[in-house]
Amino acid sequence: MTPEAEGRTVRPTGGKTGWLGALADLTKVRISLLATLSTATGYILATGRLNLQLVGATAGIFILACASSSLNHFQESRYDALMSRTRGRPIPSGRVAPYAVLLLSAVLFVAGSLALLYSAGPMALGLGLFAAAWYNGVYTYLKRVTAFAVIPGSLVGAIPPVVGWVAAGGSPIAPQIIAVASFFFVWQVPHFWLLLLAFGKEYEAAGLPSLSRTFAPEQLGRITYAWIAATAATGLLLLEFGIVRSATLGLVLFLLAAWLLWSARSLVRGGQGTRSFRRAFVAINEYALLVMAVLVAARISMAP
Image (cartoon, rainbow, N blue to C red; front, side, top):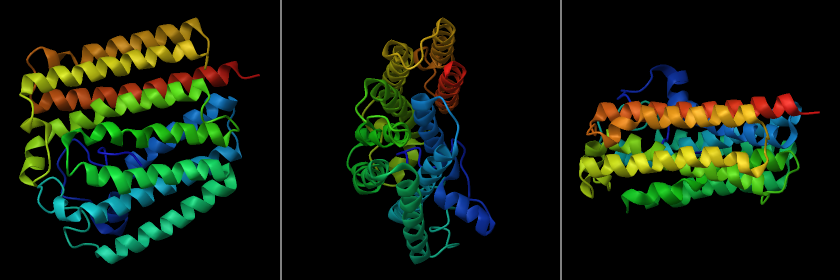
């Protein structure tokens, strides 16, 4: 349930074999798991606890994310067939019929909605369905119009932590969860752009808008680094909203931010090649996972 990450790795692939492999491709399991982790982060930040309700809420989001991802495969099969990196996916490769993918999506949407409704309530379900509608109904089509679609599309990944927070009984407009959602929103822009930058030529070949048509490589590197710096700054600002108050946490977040900026420094030092983009892509993903991990660990350790 995240936009342009869309299950696409930074390495070209011809697709996994077998029905389990096809299912993993269609549901974009790794990306769906990321939405699940951010949902769990929101829940734990609200409660400081691990319990069965957390399991139900995260399962619901995971299934909805899988449903949205499989529908996206159907929506983009024509474009996937035009790119060497994606033509091995289940639909363009002919391994799975389009109608079967639609059926899978429908079943997963129903199952995920029921799981989220009964475990987390109608507000959490509404947020989850809104994220899916924004991804499949807005972002997927908007990116065929503009290379900047990832900015409004980033709203999709900002919603899962709010779902977790709401499932725990928190308000969706509480400053603490808005700060967390903002972190994920800002993080996704360089995350998506770095992926696009690594494969910009393929997007051009498929007739899709690409940032490489608008900016020179040096400009792209600097712009993306600015978004990475904004991500690091947003991570540090989480301390100001009282989610977890700890000097140790502050030091850890500072060190993580410094590590991220250092890891991506080649983007502003003349390294605008695919290798630099991939290295920065891996670093910013690891940064998000580490921020989630330290926030959760700190919240659990301070729970009564």
